[in-house]
Image (cartoon, rainbow, N blue to C red; front, side):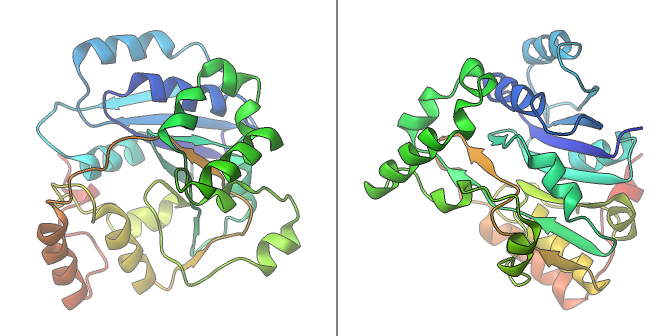
Length: 275
């Protein structure tokens, strides 16, 4: 019986997905499944993914829908419905998880709690070093690579490198943990019951940048959920890419402010509205 479902948001970036699956194959615990939430990748990518499904020690489900523009929240809702566990961990398709990533999320899981983490923003130079063999041999998680990140940060290339510092001491993780910082869509988890209680992600968001994380965090807090960020755990390494367009920020803010104004707990267009 799997203890968790790792939902990976995905769109066409197959090389990054292979790195993520390689890292998930190294996890310190093995009783989880992976659900790829695919927002309309090309047919040739879908075909290549089908060849990967039996390569790894965990089961993989590929949830895909047609490319009709940015519909990340919709495919995330479909992935939730496809999951076979009571605990869901969300991550993005450009973030490689530490080998303790799944175990860390489960370690700090509680009912009425969102467990949240951050990510190391690797530079273009260091991202180029990371291939499947680099991950498989655990070089990405080594002290040597941490030093490289640190040096790289001094020239303002890699950022948030402090988020790569791992300490497996729960009393330290809790003592220096944070209950005030918000959720990032690339790294958070909670029980499926909470997601269903708020009707999942709001599918009215049709542009990236603001929406899937801030909105659902607000609605969960209306149900008295806490957000907890344990210190020195839940590590992710973000692969470099060009910044996304910010054109959707103002449009998405209108939807978010409307949700806040009416104190909506359930998404206006969420899981229950999927046909």
